[in-house]
Length: 135
Picture (tube, rainbow, N blue to C red):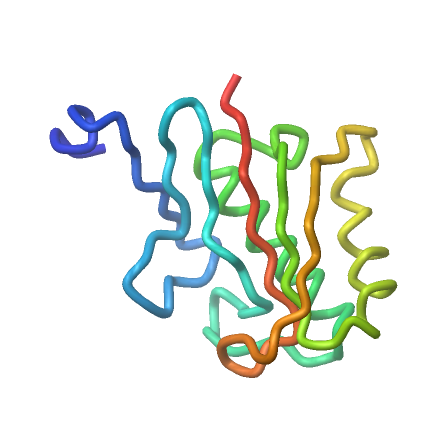
């Protein structure tokens, strides 16, 4: 954390275990006791390419990327209080829901919204963002 972040009460979160931002944004920002992640798509952090294998494979990679960003902030999925899922095809809802649910099996299910969108970066089929609470 730099001195400007200390004064502003904001902290930029970054990890090489998740894909680099593909635009002018941070992987996550901590402020006011919360961590706000940017949306993650199914990019492999090593190659920077979208994973192959369909919607389940993309969703698994999205959740792995989110887990890495949360870990960089000292958090886990148990700390997540809200997520937003963006889908280009609502027919993928059941498959995404199944994979997504594996990350919240401990009973701490966050609030959630799911939104259909026209397109996502890099041809992704799913994007998920999260808000977590630092305790």
